[in-house]
Length: 165
Length: 428
Ligand SMILES: Cc1cc2nc3c(=O)[nH]c(=O)nc-3n(C[C@H](O)[C@H](O)[C@H](O)COP(=O)(O)O)c2cc1C
Ligand code: SF4
Ligand code: FES
Image (tube, rainbow over all chains, first blue to last red; front, side):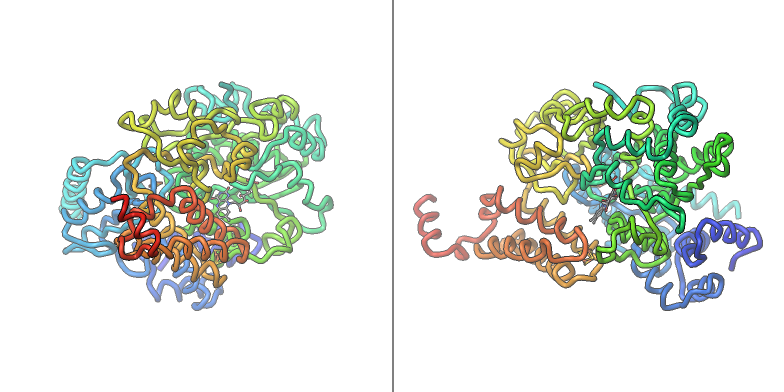
């Protein structure tokens, strides 16, 4: 599952902690960045790698909401609806995006392009409403128009990606 | 207004700009002229209080760490920042990461920690990368690592990325998360200074708390103790959000009137409307009414005096348009979602609070529900392993006490108790 370079990286991560099972979270992150989610096979693989039981890993994966336990769309749109965003139209933005893509909370659109999810405060309350894409980029001060533009752009990115590969 | 952390210096996040503006001088000074206990002494003198929410005196906390070196000692820097309405630590990672790193190094020197872990919420991918760049640069220049600046002091700093769990901001859950476990809070005692990471002495400090330390070491604790409100001195990074014209992070001295922050810095309330409710320090803090907001000063002593607290300094402003019971339902949903489930009062109680608030908002509530909500809150409060239980209970209890009319307005008339119903009939 991991190549030579990645295995070397894991050794470096292990050296940061006095006990190697502390490397579990960083290694699970590596799995998710590579595969988009964490499967049962991945958990078993990580268990062998770090000498941790599968049960313990399953417990950890199910505890942390950012670890995907099933595949998500190519673009995982996480829209905050907590108080500060709610006061600035977070729910309306979520509804708009959900209707535009024709999917409900935690659903994935046809062709596995988009998954949308209502999430808790992302620490970006001054630039509400906002969302995060693929656990990475923040998109702030959003409006319906900005959602239109972004979704159009993501569609284009995806097409040019498919063409290039 | 004095600025200690978010100084108006362009490109301060770059190591050479930080250095030309006096950066890493406090570390140099400490390593050359001060014993570790002298650093702790200055921090004690400064009267710096923790910025992570509990306002615990930082210098005092450091003295809880054992002196000797029988066991390895650890520092955890808390950058979990997941309390709704809080977004200040991210500003430090972006605008002045080296001052945070220098503060971390000084804390490690003072307490004899050879390793510091910076716990950052998993969503802060961008800010984790920004801080990692700063850490890498500091390693290259010999500020972190072995024999720092030629001394016999060595420390490593590592970032540990969270993965989406508010509870991991609680200090003992944070340690479990670093150890690669589920983020369950631990029963205290034992306290972290005696039994923390892997059973070793550990101190946990917030990112903003540590970022104040270099200036304290450079200018002396007494200097710091005179800034702002003496009982809670220094500046705070107020994160203002909600219905104001210019939301954002403002570094201001403690004791500043809340209305000065809103009117002079945030451009006033959105649409020129009246204030309805203000949450002063993240969603777990009891809210303020308009009347309270008009006169309150923003420091922990003043807020404590009216039954609230400064928390994380995350100010959420609501104007007349806000639907208070809906806001409270959203807050209750958050704590229900984030409860780790270890204690029955918190696991079950947060669900009850949410379900009752939901039915009230649907117009299916009863008058007795309001007292029931307060009753449940009071049964959660103080009966749990960690303070998430209190954090879930306080906003419910105090919002209903202070804004009861807003909730009553959602109760259908047939659900009023008889005498009240008659009264309302005659009013209508
Ligand atoms: C549920 C819960 C969440 C918390 N989240 C944070 C957090 O995100 N950041 C933080 O610094 N402290 C948080 N705290 C407080 C920490 O437990 C701890 O008191 C703090 O990090 C100590 O640092 P300080 O003394 O510098 O304030 C939280 C506490 C609780 C109960
Ligand atoms: S109070 Fe809640 S979050 Fe804290 S340990 Fe108990 S169940 Fe978990
Ligand atoms: S409430 Fe949405 S980012 Fe904080």
